[in-house]
Image (cartoon, rainbow, N blue to C red; front, side, top):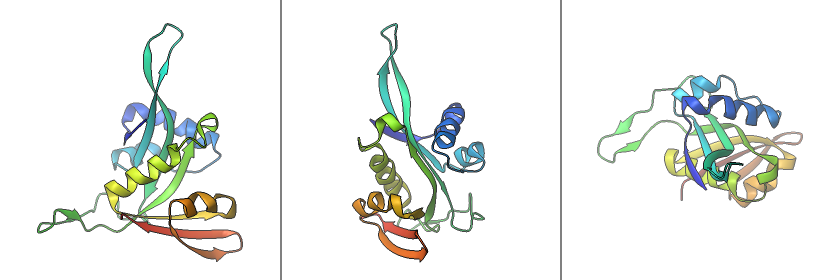
Amino acid sequence: MDVRLATEADALEVRRLIDGAMLEAGDIEARIEAEDVLVVTLERQTVEGDIREAIGGAIVLEYPDDEQVGSAETDPSEGASTSPARHIRAIAVRRRRRGQGLGTALVEATLERYGTLTANFDADIRPFYEALEFDIERIAGDRYRGQKEQS
């Protein structure tokens, strides 16, 4: 399993994955260009016996106000990004790959890359974010908001 930034060539597969999960992620191509899409890849064997890379999951990010794309600044004394936290717009893992740690790998790699993440989610997804040790608060009805900083 490997997590990497998505490329233009991944756009269609990422869109299929997000659509298959019945999620809305906006303009996938623009998100890929802004380096706001990561994919988790797995090796799979084709009928011919070749080993190929297959996308098992994807995470699509945005800034909370979605007006900050491309505006990250760096503190020259520390070399760290001073941009606001990224927000998880959508995260999806192929149904047959769920429960195998792909979603966790996506979130952990995203935390390593960006430092802080936020997410809004429904009650049925709460156990996933709790297991990742997000700070969680109820925002309305069965909706929650979570935040985690890289530790």
